[in-house]
Image 1 (cartoon, rainbow over the protein chains, first blue to last red):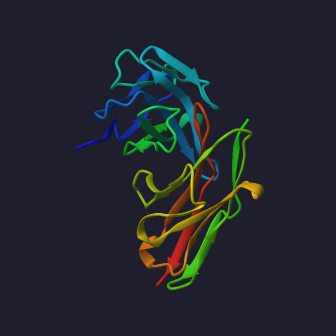
Image 2: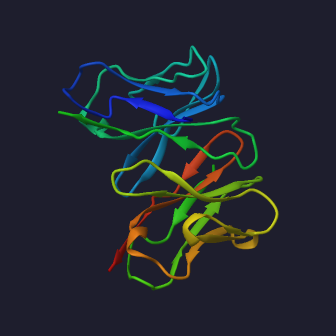
Amino acid sequence: EAQVTQNPRYLITVTGKKLTVTCSQNMNHEYMSWYRQDPGLGLRQIYYSMNVEVTDKGDVPEGYKVSRKEKRNFPLILESPSPNQTSLYFCASTLYAKLAGGELFFGEGSRLTVL
Amino acid sequence: AQSVSQHNHHVILSEAASLELGCNYSYGGTVNLFWYVQYPGQHLQLLLKYFSGDPLVKGIKGFEAEFIKSKFSFNLRKPSVQWSDTAEYFCAVKGDNDMRFGAGTRLTVKP
């Protein structure tokens, strides 16, 4: 089944404790992206990747890192989480970023709480 | 920079009422336009999309949207909503490198 898989789905952590949210897709998509969803703000892009070893900042990259060593995986790293990073995170992918009409496929979401 | 505006934050309707959710965007180049739906506790799913051709596009579950280029709008419509349409709806604009989302409109349909 074609899907985007995120882990963990739920996480409660404390300020400063490094964590990684994994994202994996099995559709051979080149483009992958991370969003955070906050009430009243919609989805804001954190980082995106056009292809392996190519990543770029989105609108709200502060406090986050990503890597794209393989096509299928795009982990989101919070080196020193802070309470303002409490949010719902979505990973998404599409075949080619510039492909007309290509929609994003979303993971199930990861709800992160930083105390 | 491209941006997306959704006019209504929360819409409350009774079943069988008609729905129209507004979406305006700002972008200088060729865009692809999307509406996504997020049911409670779930991830975003595609409702419909426009990238060329007929500006009136039909999606799943009886939804449709009309692209009006001169108004930079892509409003979502449904003639008769059902209780199961209760969800959050996001308009999105795709440019060359990324996709931007509106803040979302929460739709509550009362039985």
